[in-house]
Image 1 (cartoon, rainbow over the protein chains, first blue to last red):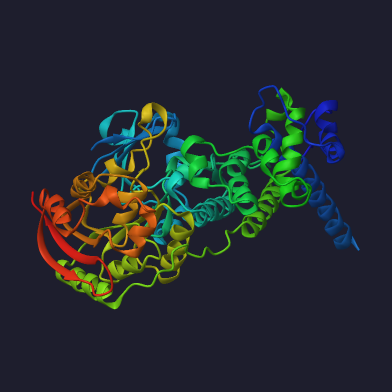
Image 2: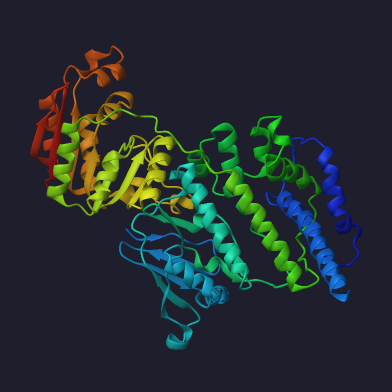
Length: 67
Length: 451
């Protein structure tokens, strides 16, 4: 899913930053947060991994068909 | 009553009158209207009654105006998430997800995902917001309404599962449900670190700390197949989570058995009246609602207890009778809500003169004693809810249930008895038939409204 994106360090790091949060406890937030941002980030991370899975599967199928 | 109930969507507005629902689709909404009208999936959902039917009345081609006017069939009695038991919220979520997944196959989707898009026809959920259906960018692998789906369906259902959180109270004050940042502190501490709580609430709550503008920029997959694969995978995951959050079947709190004489009196009254719309007040186990639905009536059943309403919804859903069970307290009915208190009409406004029969059985002592509502006012309100008939049970001060609620305050009810009851009833009703029950200080009345 990242094919047309600029190699922006922030967005490229996003899945890893989300993973890093696995070890961070939820702390009360004082500032206003967009109520959808956390879910969106989580969905983006999921989409990144599932997109990679899809491309890997596609490659595998192409490789098998060549054999 | 004319309710103009829709103003948030820039694509159109809806005008609801007693008999008609007319939607004016503005230029910003015509592409979504076409997405719906041209969708085979939408047609299939209309066929099975899960999507509201749409008939074009006036289009730019015929009138020269920019707006398109369409009409929908009227769902007989509108209800809102703040009146649904958890099982109904779950059914609304299932329909939203089912529609969204099916639309994906033809390159369409839902732009939002909220209980406000659903009404119930009897016990069946119906998706009503046709302008929510949109054509998708085939390369877009992200469902933007995902966060709203979580806030308004998944997280409330999760909170209810973990803490018995009263969802009807939540939606009365929180139109947009509850986000992970607020929900995380309500979940029990150890549980929030395990699935599905972890992925639904804890991690998204933590991830919101990473918010920046870049997360909102449009994403594109490498090809359409990847985008569809990612979304289909996402919807399957949501379905799995939703299935895991199905409310456990509710056991009605009240399990008192109904005397045969009472059952026969109500059965015979319903046969004579042959009602088309029945309001069952304090429906408890729903036995009288099922009886009225069996007699061919559309029934709205109200009970202050979500477990009772949930159990009745499950029973109605299984047998497909026309019953809409709602979590509404007759002594404290749902108020008008939303912007300027005009988005959601109050229960009494919706119910006024809507029903031809009201049933109030084994309940008046709760309103008189526990809620301290004067008897004459109870009859005044009942007279606004039924256009013709009232089947009501007199429960006198010597009745054990009455005495239990009165808790020794018998002196307060010295004035109360059959004659006082009938005096109050006769202000608005004529007595047609009565039946004295043998066991206690109770009697059944069939009353006809005077005006």
